[in-house]
Amino acid sequence: MIENLDMSSWPMRTSQEHRAHANKWRLAKSSDEWEHIAKTHGVRFSELLRLPYWDVIWFTILDSMHAHFLHALPQHIRYIWGISPTASAGDGNNSPTVKPPLKPSSAELCKGLKALLKERSSDRPAEIVSRSCTRPVLWHLCCEFNLRRAGTSVMLARALLEWVSYALIFVLIG
Image 1 (tube, one colour):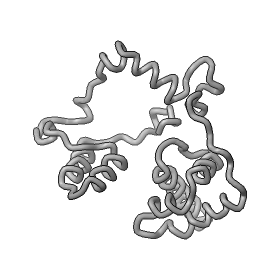
Image 2: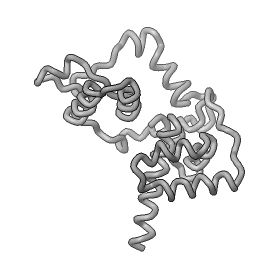
Image 3: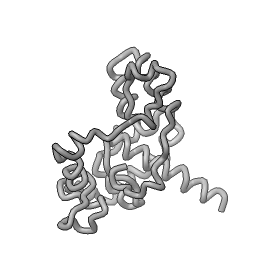
């Protein structure tokens, strides 16, 4: 999550999970399926994964040439995370290169909430919600509930659907 700089809240990925997603990618039958798996899980297959002793998580190294010598890491910190002396808050929520979309009307936001409630139990709810709501609607709903606002419309819809599921559980258990 681009805005979340609290490392303790980041979900840990295991080598087994990574291998499973990479094998799904390797066995995919179409470029659409490859793209979906890569975007959803951030994984593509590598021949190194055929080595039983290769642990993709523990054996990943920081590429010093790109991270330091080519100034990719400072650029990423300043312009993607929004951490700089000149950025308001400096916590990644106010990246100087990203302008928030114009706020939709209350009616559009309500329509977006209704779509979340209606589609949450469908087969692929995030994809359906992302097609029925505009990106500004999804972005501002995420902002309203203090959720991640970076990524594709499907990623925003997924964050909102997860929030709706938790909110409904808390309402049901009182």
